[in-house]
Image (cartoon, rainbow, N blue to C red):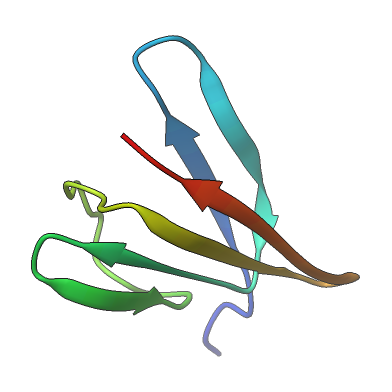
Length: 67
C-alpha cells in the first residue's frame, strides 16, 4: 500500500523554514512548476520566487518564496 503522506523539510541558509508531515507540496523551480506526492524520489532543486503550497491533513498552507 502506498504512503499517503511524507516528511517534508525545507531548509534555507539561515534556518529550517518548514518541517512536518504533508500530503503534497507544490512550488516553482528553475525547470518549471513541480508537485511532489508521497513516493517521489528524494529531490534537491533550485526554487524560484513564487507561492509555495503545502497540503497537510488538516488543510493547506501557503508561503511566499523569494530570493
